[in-house]
Image (cartoon, rainbow, N blue to C red; front, side, top):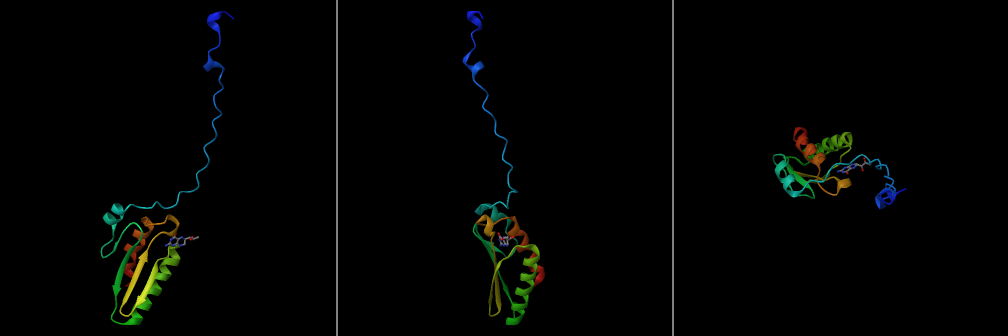
Length: 118
Ligand SMILES: C[C@H](O)[C@H](O)[C@H]1CNC2=NC(N)=NC(=O)C2=N1
């Protein structure tokens, strides 16, 4: 081997063994920013990056109870469960995605849909 054929340092370094990319677990719903939530709030809803909520008014207490039952049935179907506060003449429904620690598209979708249950 002549002098100018001496191996360069780079030639002797082994390429680092690239580790295979770990398979990513299925990504859960993505937590939205306060601005994203504000822009996408369905009509009648209010909230921030931690949760969204809406008050539904009822003439009779039991109408609110029955509405809450319908919301609960849909929540079970969707596997996405809001907090439901039943008061006299009013039901407050609050959505957040526990698994994401904030508001996600799931919350916005469910919120937009439950007006049809009134
Ligand atoms: C295991 C079960 O599917 C999860 O805990 C579901 C159930 N319902 C849920 N409801 C809400 N609001 N947020 C969640 O993250 C959630 N996760």
